[in-house]
Image (cartoon, rainbow, N blue to C red; front, side, top):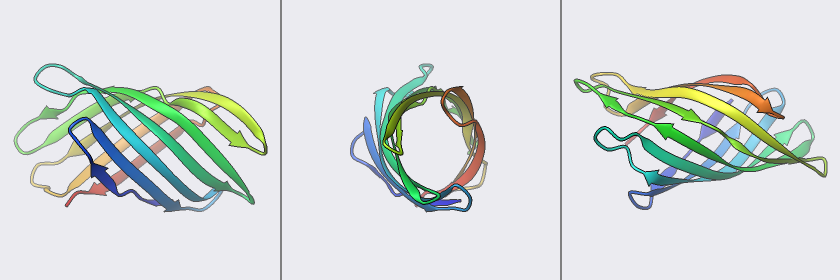
Length: 147
């Protein structure tokens, strides 16, 4: 699949992100909004603690699916000579509404965002999610352009 995710930083503690995407297979279309609250910023030796609240719509086969939830996470950025590495751990949880049924879910996710030395505008992400209850397990990777 392919997603376009414009992101706007409203303050040091709040970001808003939209998602519109297409793909093949079960999830052919997606649309969503995400708000990230930074409870404790990643400063000095303290790791960052944040929570993302989200609502997403997916077109599954010929029916719609809504997902609402939160992704509490902890992360820490390590910087070197013009390079950065940010490992994170999150517990996405929420509700899925599909075919007039609501079902709770929980996942565990681990990953990293990295910026190679000499690369100014791109960040690369690798993530794996694991089913804890009524969720998908996945491996995901991507590239993000920052201007």
